[in-house]
Length: 276
Image (cartoon, rainbow, N blue to C red; front, side, top):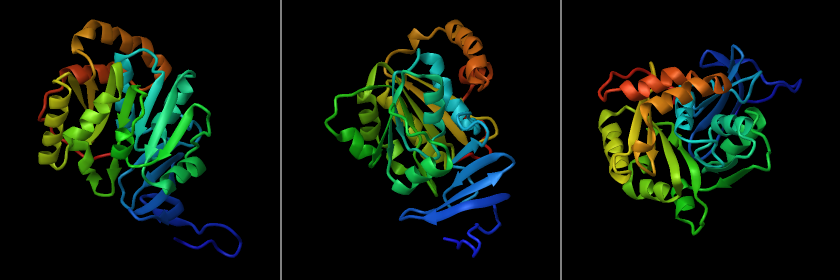
C-alpha cells in the first residue's frame, strides 16, 4: 500500500489512465480505486473494471454490462426482494435502491475489504433496506433460510475472470431454489475462455429447463443470461417491447436497444474486450 506524504495527502499516482486514489490488498488480490474523467472505477490488480461510478450521480449505471443485467427488469414488475451475489462497488444495489423504494436487498460478498471500499469510496448507502453478509455465495445459499427472492444477481469474478463456482449445477440449482415462483436469475459471464463459457451456458440451460435468454454486451466479452423460474411463454415479445419503451425514460439504460439484442442474438457472435 502506498504511503501518505508528510502533508497528509495521497501522492499523485497514475494507474489505468487515471489517478489512483486508494490502494490496498487482501488475501485474494490487490484492490485499486481509480478516478478518471468524472468516473471512479474499482480494479483487482488489473486494467479490467470490476465496477464504475459516476461521481456526480452515484446511483447511475456506468458500465455496459450492468445496464444489460438490469434489462432483467423487463421480465418482472417492481422487485421487492433481491439477492446480489458479489458486490464490487455496489452499482446494482445502488441503482435498485434509488428506483424501488419498497425493495429490500441482501448482498453476499466474500471479501470484507471490498465491502468497506464500497461504503468508503463508491457511495454505497447504509440503508435499512440493505443487508450485507460476509460469506461465500455457495455457503450462504446452503443455509437453512426460507426467504426467496424475486431477483438474484450473480456477478462473481476474481482477478483471473469467472470463478469455477458459476458453472456448477449444484450451485445453479441452489440459486433456482431461492427464487420466488416468478423469480429471475441474472448471470454475468465472460465469453473467454470459450470452452468454459459454453459449458456454463449448457449448465444454466439444463438447470432452468432452457427457460433462458442470452444477451451479448456490445463491444465486450460480457454476456448476460436471464434464467427464469417459470416458462418464457409468460413474456410475449410485443409485451416486452412495450415495457422497454415505457421504462426507458425512467431507467436511462437504453432498454429498447437491449430488448432488440435479447431477441435477435445468435450464439457464436464475435467477442471483444470485457468490462470485467
